[in-house]
Length: 580
Image (cartoon, rainbow, N blue to C red; front, side, top):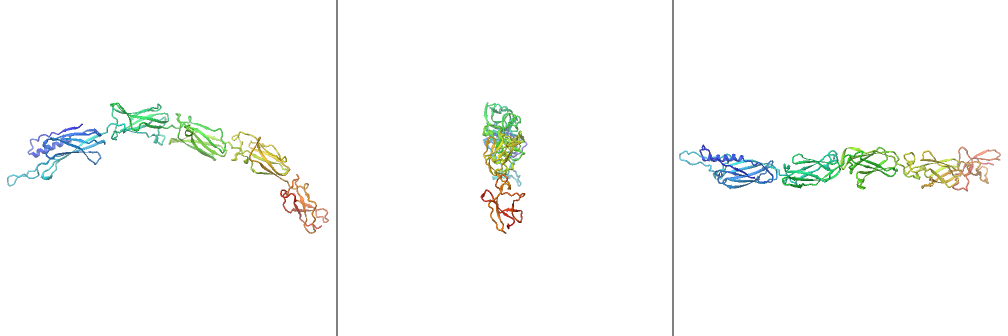
């Protein structure tokens, strides 16, 4: 509403002696009245107007009224429209401004030209010099010998924000940005989001009393709005509570009681993400396979839930074990792969049948770290051995050796390919307790039944009087095992005099030269042999010699093996020449 500012200038007082003094008084009265104009408080975006009324006698030719406005803290002045309505009346219109805050309005009045600043001629030799008076605030030295009187007055104007606008409102929810569990939006704890109100020019504003209000609505009955309260200038805090984790859609409306209107604010509906609470021991679940065999990929499954039953769908797990030889593999989120939210499969691998204590910790969920890691129940793992591997049942899996007529033993172990003993104790019992058995198709090899003390290591005795190589097959109960056969070499014993014989006829020898005889060496079981027993050296007894030489030691002339050339007997040479 324009401010009407009549400025009636009073008549000059009777005591003023001159016309110039009267004019100065009228101008001074204008100044006082102009300083009393109060523009008051207005909304941004509206035009503010006021009028100024002067006496016609104050408005000489060339009189002018200039008005400018300036925002607080700004260096630029904004010109204002001034309309001369004649008769000493001026209409002033301030342009609409989008920025709220204090403004200063500067009113500058320039009075028209007055008497020239020259002496007035008078009669007599020394006439008096009369100067035109200069009103307060005036200036001297105008062109043409005239002077202009100028006065400046500063008025105050305050522009306040307009009403809140739905399109300019800003919603702020910091829950998804939180990286600390203490400030995140969590089920079972009170959360909030902020509503920042602005007018259509972008100025921070507050809701009009008894007219405007914000209203938050959610279609999910598990999501409750608790409070809607101011939180600073132009900010309202809307608090909510829910025990259900998930994503909620909240509509925010700007309501007007005077206009009976509802408008959905910008950014509505607001998406609110509520994370589950900490894992709850009574709600979490654990399961593992009934058995695990070394050499395979094993796993156990954990189900993570909070005290309200909400699954932890994006948990981050840490795994530890104090025992070596176990390797942790991948953690599979079953909620993504198999549609089981909150369940995770933890995979591992080992080749040794040790006792393992597996520990699992929850470090955080949905990118939010917990203040302390949450420890799940401990999993005690005792792997079973793998499948029986025949190649690892013997220490020497290719060949065994024995002597003719000497009882021997074969030791057989139930072991897998990683040399883990099978059935060594109650922790690695397999489904089969069958006994090992070694069989040979050659009846010359006599085998005894296997004996064991622990069900894992078996001892089998054998005896053979015939030297040679025997082929063995390993059986487990009634099943012939793959991976054979195995060889058992029975070596002949030392030569025996009762089984050995000289070659006939004995070749002749010349006097003074060494002689040679052929001897067939056999052990006591009749097996041809070339073994030499140091405790029983081989000697040749010669009888009929008149010199009575007795027995003569002999040595083998060359090694001989029955397997190479059985037709050639070992040659023996006398250690003393034969003279007769």
